[in-house]
Length: 167
Image 1 (cartoon, rainbow, N blue to C red):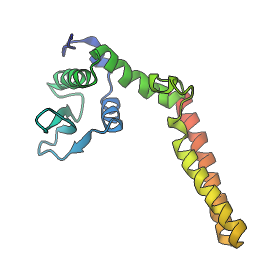
Image 2 (spheres, helix red, strand yellow; image 1 turned 45 degrees about the vertical axis):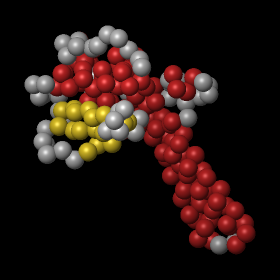
Image 3 (tube, one colour; image 1 turned 180 degrees about the vertical axis):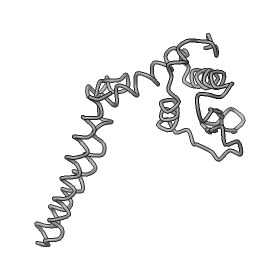
Image 4 (tube, one colour; image 1 turned 135 degrees about the vertical axis):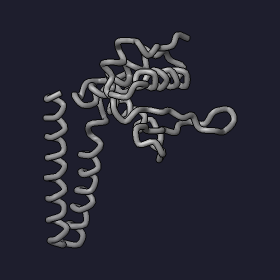
């Protein structure tokens, strides 16, 4: 499989925050590292039971930034049995699609983008529980909590959509 090289121009368009978000969304754990200029992420276990590690710079100005980004993309490509191009597309495309509400490869199977609805759905579930409690117990405080959660859910949904349109 081909590898991406540190001088690949696509790495210059890559945002460090998108790579970090991608790693965290896929279960990589950020570890404490003695070097305050680097992040270390621990991922799935290798054949010997040791976790894969990815070292990323904390900012894009370090000399080995593009070497570290290339290494990270290549490790992810090997682990996912995909090309570095596909990993780059997933990091760039998935981040933008989730923010904008567009379908990603992961959501095409279901036909809708569920990521943007998780917080509002959780709030809606809380509202239903509060309403059931209100009907059963008649407590005014429960009603106020339910209304508050409903307003938070609506606010979260509107902010999610607004941020998606701004990007």
